[in-house]
Amino acid sequence: MNLYETQNLLDQYLLFHYGSCSEINPFGIFKNSHLDFPVRTVHENFDCSVKLHRALDLGCSVGRSAFELSVFCDEVIAIDNSKLFIESAEYLRLNSGLSYQIHKEGNDFVEALAKKPEPSIPERIKFEVGDALNLPKDIGTFDAIHAANLICRLPDPDKLLLRLPDLLNKGGRLVITTPCTWLGEFTRPEKWPESSTIEWLQDALTKDLSLIEVKDMPFVILEHYRKFQYSLAQVSIWSKKDN
Image 1 (cartoon, rainbow, N blue to C red):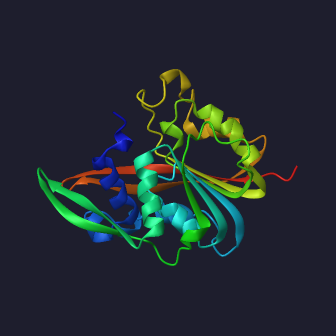
Image 2 (image 1 turned 60 degrees about the horizontal axis):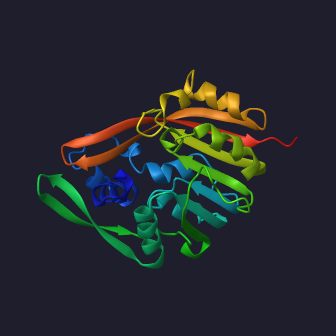
């Protein structure tokens, strides 16, 4: 069974994307600045004061980053391979809220509501079920590409890296985040980077893209009230060269 097509993972990711600080962090053990990862990956890595034409959100999950991109991008194409995640994101695009459950423990759950973010512009977003490794040939090019915690979940990540430069307009910005959690269930070991993840990205991308910055961004996913995933994503920010 695909974990990303289960109600349990859907509820976790709706909380991760749309939950309040108190809902994600019920005991107050994490800094608030380490929460709201799908919001921070947009606002801390793109210049949101600059109006852009097109943005691509690859591995968009349940959609929060796409809503954030819609504030300053005229068109946002948001793609994920989970039908359940995309259906939920599309429901939220068309409606004011989506109910889900937060797992406390055992059979104890709390009802919660994911609210459509403000001041997003939902009519600018198109959510699609799709494969990041087999994007349509006519998808066009973009001023911004956001690929959060996707690269180490692909069966052949090199294939995406080969395609990314051609998808980015000159001067456009690419943001890749990854916790560098390489697992055989997603990517066969022979497809893992031979060196560090950032060195592998540099080897693949520096011919066409300039590396602007590398930094770390923590994030928290609540599994239940007493179990959390606390991770440190590596963020690399790239710009398309003019030549």
